[in-house]
Length: 492
View 1 (cartoon, helix red, strand yellow):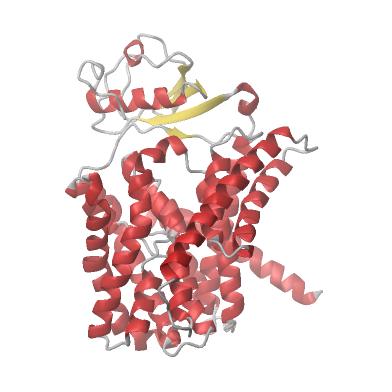
View 2 (tube, one colour; view 1 turned 135 degrees about the horizontal axis):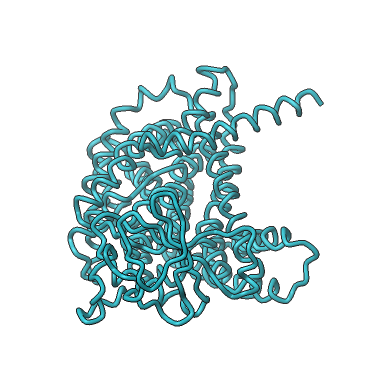
């Protein structure tokens, strides 16, 4: 009983500190995930003395956390916001992965004198962008829906092919010509399983009459976890099945949808916190200095050669402007996923795998600091920050699901053409109305003669059918002003 009490106490304290770290990281401009790693390192053998070196358990818990993170990412991703980026997102999660693995592996083979298999293994482990890092950083930047959607889809989809590549390269078996066919099967089967369980789960939840509201979020998450299990049982991609099932469910007409999304967001945060603290606890700072040089070499190759080249080749058919390509290249955020995947060859006893794990840990810390803190500046310098974007508000206490209504929050930022527009000139579609304006800390109900100002916050009530049209109108006026329609601006 005493051990359980201690474990529960330490776990609660770590969780509270991690939650507070979110606020601290926001003020410092650092990604909160980096602070979670730091908490784990402090708890580890070098400071507080907690010794934890179980690679198998770390990998198992890491995969479980990744499943929950992908579940949260899929459930909270709006299909309308990402469907225009679907082809680009798929290209980034497949073509870009192949290019990144090949370029990074080839460079490290010659620069670090690694054998070809180990060099490609380094490239595979490092080619996966991290869903937790992308979801937590990009959604607050205010860049356009096309870029955000492409990067979210990439981070949600590319774990599957990268995981398969790492497993193949870490195996002692000879890689045969059938390996690409196996990868195609696993990805296709995983996607089909995800679609099937997503639609079946959504239909079942709509017909279920559960006795408590809180059971619906639990059932929704359970369907997504079952998708992973089903995919794994038939030797398909469980990661892809999970994300696709969550994406389908998140865009279905779910009972108590707002409660479900709020629960999934909290569960995603819990998984992120637990995963990064665990990986920090597993790391050994005393070994990290020995791999600093190869880690930095790999980081330079990945960041300035492999990632830009892979983005250029993947986006070639879609005529992506160079500014957006530059942002996509710098947005390849790494996080816990490469560390978890690096444990696979370590568990299988691959020679040099311990150095790979340590080097990946160093690289994740360095790239998180460098890329995570400079992304907002780069987005502004490239002119990609969109003001006036409508953002979904999670509502806990209002029965909006029964009313088939949603709430949108719009913050009018400096430089927005919404400034100076009269409420009557906003001309939102039928079914949408501005119910509240917050100005200078005071809220009031707007009139047709109310004129919008910079820093105003608008609360818009809209039916589900009118939501997309309301968002497009807000974006159009934000970009072109009250005469947006005459100027041909549609907000798409």
